[in-house]
Length: 68
Image 1: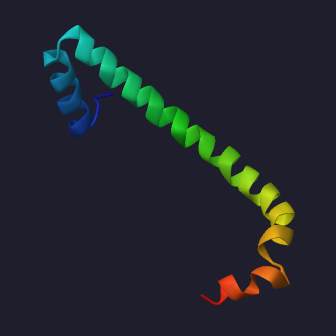
Image 2: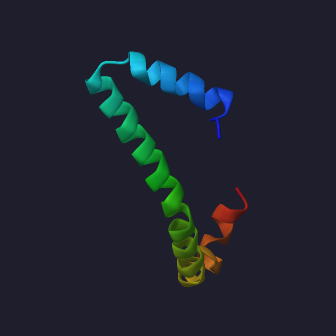
């Protein structure tokens, strides 16, 4: 099976880079992959913390700030 055209173009560009730059590209790809993998964890943490923080955010003392 042949890779899609855009993949082939990226491979050609990678082949023209010096090894140090290829390592940087690989690090960046790893960063993007890990960041995407963390999103469900971040969303779960936000959902859990929202209930606990609502007492801090939603109170009569801060109602004036809510109207700003």
